[in-house]
Image (cartoon, rainbow, N blue to C red; front, side):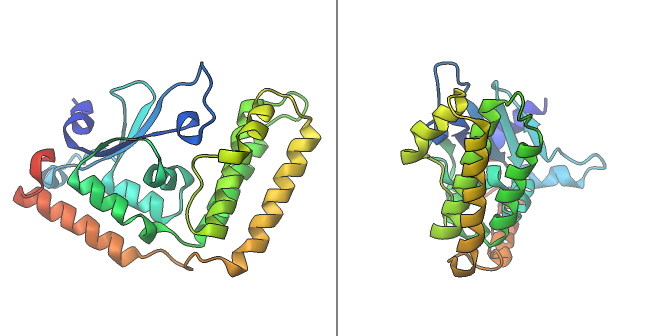
Length: 227
């Protein structure tokens, strides 16, 4: 079963979503994201192994390590949040090495990726009948992008923004207020980029070196219990 790849070969599993952000309610699910490593010999077959899998737990989604690295190098917000999640449920030595490498994935591409994902969410919102939960997460994404551009790492726990974001989720604000906050955050992200401490490009060579070492360890059987 494909789920066995996640169960037997996971190197990192974290909680993301509302519980990681500090925005959970009594009804909130536990959203898990993780990274697993396909044993190298499986790539020699005609049918290639999966790049991602759902389960086995509810609301659990995992990427194969190579796919995860590609997404994180592209500044995918969810992938980067996995590397900074405050709730780590499982971590092997390979997962620990991945986390220690997390700054290598960062670059000014985050400006485009975070604002782009937020814009995509905005387009799915109907101002006449807003999905307030989606509106909250759009604003949270922009807050995370702003913090990343200004401080050089993603904002996962929303901290002082919690009450204001939850007010949006409950629909206690007007759509005009949501739009105004979004516009303010967009403008601040644009203004912060020229002085950002983020490098222009990620450290692709360091990430590739990590990936190659993981494949070699899998092949030689020196990767410990995860193989």
